Length: 292
Image (tube, rainbow, N blue to C red; front, side, top):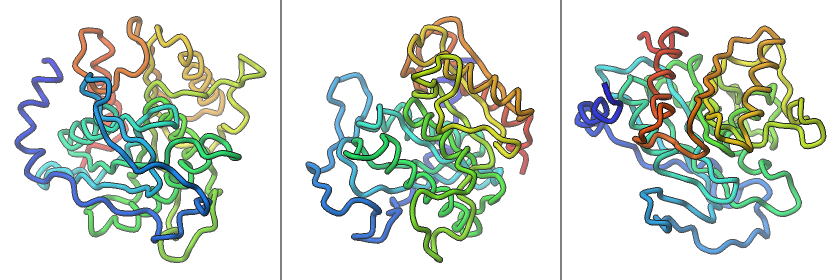
């Protein structure tokens, strides 16, 4: 059965709840490292007329909770990180549409709007990693109110958001900011992760190794990876991530589709790669994340 048809059937259920109001990740004036940073006003538009909403100039990072329908709620939650090269956020086909899909299988979703574009003088992922770590902790802080299991909090990201997902899962509880006693009392590492065509994983100096900031250990959480063979720039990074997970005896499933490129998100396209959400649901079910 086509995924688009399944989603069409489930849309009425999804819309009963809908997303809640966005929650700012940091108190006003306390976003780390942002003093003196001046950006144009945040904007959101389908500039390329391709149905993709792109958000630019994010200086106030937020998370938006998409609750699963009560009768389907598994207690599992997933933080969704759109891609965009750490320059913009592809907020629809790699964001809100993905949250709707997760809701349809009984998974609560949290859409992360992290800071872009890249900040000068620091690593490309520096500010986004702060936002992601804070979001994971805050989701667990809200676990009881949101009816989620704090030990079933995952993270799913695309492209740069996939890179961010991998960095968050390998952070070993080392926060990239000074924690506070209200929002950072819970773990900032997800229980499982889903990097979809993740970017920037390959070491620039050693093409057969992962980037040095990515260190897989015996504590790295279970991972599901999807990429297309035609993603010439980033497919190798996904394979290297799988190999390192395998060598460290960590649970990992890798899907490399024969056709497709980069940036397909959750679009209904003719290539077989468009069925990755169904494979993800299979994996989550096998891992026990879809049981109540």
